Amino acid sequence: MVMRKILAIILIVSALFVFVGCEKAPQLYDDISDVQEYIWAEYSDYILFDVVPTIDHDKKTISWTISFRGKYIWNEKKTEQTPPTEVMEGIRECINEYISTDASQLLGVYKSEIVFLRPAKSPFSGTAEDVACSVGWLRNYSNDGLKYDLFSSVDYSFFDEWDCILGKEDIIEIGMRRSQADIVASVVESLPNLKRVYVYDIDVATELSEHYPDIEFV
Image (cartoon, rainbow, N blue to C red; front, side, top):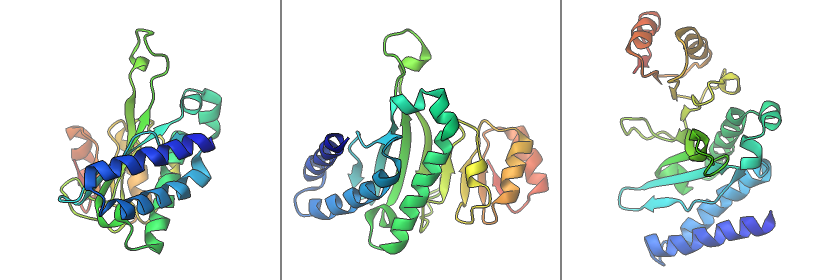
């Protein structure tokens, strides 16, 4: 586990020098590795840092992928004990806590997106499970580009499990593309500062807009 972590950090450092140049690389190394350390302490049994973040200083954006461990995400017993949504939400809380204590952290200063990746289950088996896919994301900005202080935009709808976010005051946007109207309504009512919900269903959006006029349903 230690060697895997060291390798991940080496890859990140090497890439940072290539993508952003020597002058800015040390700060990026410190910022990203510090956040990884913070997350790793709690969630190393569930995730890997095996994809180098993409950083664009001109646009001030960071795109980062966190991969679930195959031995966790494809183990029904383990995911029942610790649901993937709980892991993703816990990571969001870790990052927000870190940003709150360090206002200069690039993940907070830049528009940042973190995508969670489910690895292929059994390559070459001829099924849809052969292909790695995105199963959730976190952002510190809205879909129309408005920057948030924290990671307040989330989408865990691949799993359609929402208990882990109920009552959270720092969630402003949420993607719920697989959920029925009654499930969306129960989540909406529990999030006091929610402003926008992506349901990707015009009928559900129309129905909920009538009951919650202060929230935008897309």
